[in-house]
Length: 73
Image 1 (cartoon, helix red, strand yellow):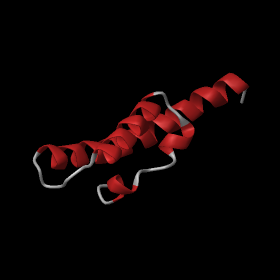
Image 2 (spheres, rainbow, N blue to C red):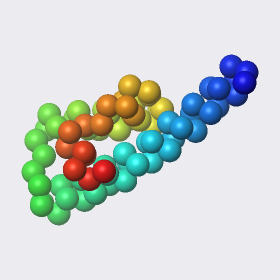
Image 3 (tube, rainbow, N blue to C red):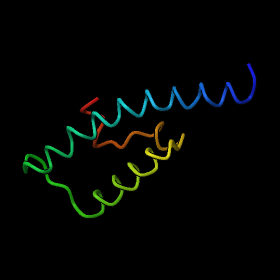
Image 4 (cartoon, one colour):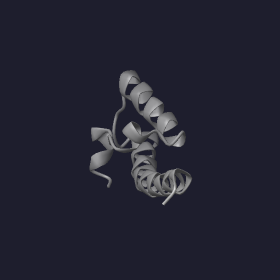
């Protein structure tokens, strides 16, 4: 497998993992929006930064799920 093929395959794997995390994030943010759970400003900033990194297919971000989301996976 060439380097380009491996890179493409890696991106596909990252996208699949990211999709699982984004589903958990959607549940979390709905719970925050409805007031079921409270989120402080620091947590909000950390999670939005993590989300942006995931959008960019950042390997470390995708492989490091925030503890707030673990219960929704």
